[in-house]
Image 1: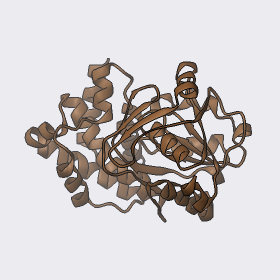
Image 2: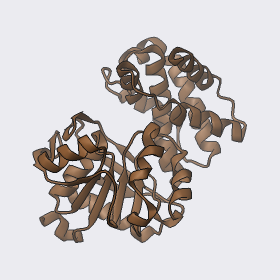
Image 3: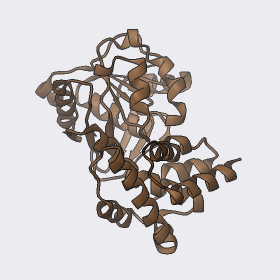
Image 4: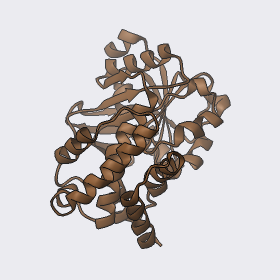
Length: 304
């Protein structure tokens, strides 16, 4: 409760209490905020009865008690959306505009298309896209392993009032996250994509971890990175190809993209949300992206 006292406890919803959402829910609940997790029946039942067990390199090991339900039934101050892009449409049925009230929506999704979708469904002044840098995995319902020594969140919005973003960042910082409010929404959403799209597509195309991609396919990876940077710049983002290549080099050699893990597990891929989004933006702005095009096609053919 001491952390919440610094900003005042608020009511927070987390749609999708998986690796990222579960981490947020546990840490914010421990900080004294009232947290309700929105999930399917079986997951909601586990969270109601057992809470969320977090094993974290940064936050320690603890169990946090949270509310859990299959849909939002009372207004919240803040709502994090942390589902997979492939599940977004169905998951939003748990979050009606009427139940949300005036809550600020902070989506932490892969891709760049979801802010427009959310602004069509909810009031635009309630939508504040964000990017999170973290390695966090759901081991089973209610059990989260946060393995990175960092948890960094950048927020920005062309439609939400700056004061509301500042308040959300303050809540996150008081709980222990490294949170910043940025001036440029395009840069926030595309900064992640310039790293994510090349690495996710390459690791999934070749079905290997990051280290082997660097060793065996560096030229293709660098080319893919340059193409996504060019698309990002055409969309108004401030990004640098060198910074993207540096991020490729720093990525742990054994690390796998979430798309590769989904492919290995037979789960639906966020191929359209990641690769498809780059192709659509490239076509809109007339930017050639032959490497990304071939990667998306190769993965699509293999997926059938």
